[in-house]
Structure formats: C-alpha cells, structure tokens
Amino acid sequence: MRQLLFLLLGFLSGIAVSVAAVSADELPTVSTPSAFSTSNDGGQVFTDDNSPQAMRAAKRHLYLPTKTPTPTEGVRWPTRNVKIYMDTNDHALQVAFRGAVRAWNKTGAVHLKWVRNEDQADIIARDGSLSNNDSTPVGYSTAQLGSTSTQYNPDTHSLIQARSTLDATHLDYTSRQFRTEVAEHELGHALGLAHAPEYMHSVMIPRNVKTGITKLDRRTIRQLYNVTE
Ligand SMILES: [Zn+2]
Image (cartoon, rainbow, N blue to C red; front, side, top):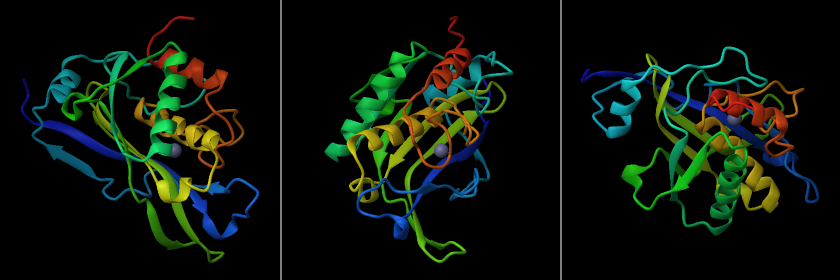
C-alpha cells in the first residue's frame, strides 16, 4: 500500500451573487468566477492520508464514461452508497441539504445516506461564510452562495472526501426552492459533476441556478455511476 497518496484539492464551484443587483421581488442574479479561480488553495496537495476513505480510493481504478450529456470532473465515488454528514445547525440549510439528498437519490444513481459520525462521512454538508470583497468591473461586491471542495485520487479517479458549503447569510433572502436547488448544485459537484454549459437545461450551469436536477443531470449521474437505463 502506498503511504503517500498524491491528492489534488480542487475547489470546484462557485455560485456567486451580485448583491447590489438584487431587487426585493426577484431571485438574485448569480454569477461565478471561472472554475478553480475561487480556490483558496487550488494547488496540488501531498498528504500522508491513511484514512479508510483514502485507502478505499487507492484500491480500485474506476471505469468512467468518456461522453456524458453534461460534463463530469472525471472522478466519482468508488461506491454508489455515499455517506453524508450534516455539519450545520441552520434549519433552512438543513432543509435544503435534505431536499437535495432526496433529489439525487431519486435519480437511482447513488444512495446518499445520512450518518451521525463525521469520521465515517464521505461528504460533509456545512454552512460557512463565503463572502468576499472582490469588486467586479462594474463595481459591486459579490458573495458566493455555495461552494464545494473535493479530494480525490488522480490515479484511480476515486473521490476521497467532499465538502459542500452553503452561505446562510445570503441564502436567507432566497426561497426554500432556490436554496434546495443551490444545495443540489453543490452536491452535484460533491458527486463528481462539473459545470454544464449555460445553454443546457441543467442544475450544474454555473450562473443563475434556474432549475433543480433535470433529465440531463439524471442521465449524466447514472452514466457516471454505471447504472444502466
Ligand atoms: Zn458550481
């Protein structure tokens, strides 16, 4: 067994909202920086990770489909049974994460199961402040609504850990449905999905989360996890 696993820490995702552009009666206009540009540390991480999750990821080389309806990150969990831990006390965010878990489970591709022990979890569902003070060229501040970071083994294409974060401060001003859709987007990253092009009908488009999980998303996640139609 190799002691030194070569891991990449990729900060996927970024749903950003331009705060100043929000009017009271409409959903925020969401925009995102390009992939990996929001990374706190997008570089390569060398870690001596002996966790069961890392060991499991090192064991098996995964078959991944080359062509899917929407893009993937080229990684997935080595099992369809994925454990998730709720690391937030914010009720609205708990509702959003639970709804997102139910929606992904409905695709039949994966079975996300809530666990009480954080150490056993593959995915951590958490809250956190994603605000930043970056100014855009037009001069208003942006704040992220959600973000997901993943750790994976690049040799086996196997995910080791994912953390999906929702920002309560900014999501407080949105609807329950919108919060659930943002949670679905973030958990989509946590399951190995990448951003879809803007023109696609997908929960994974980087700007303006306009929809929940679509038929396209369902087909992609099922292909990624080798579930035949
Ligand atoms: Zn994203």
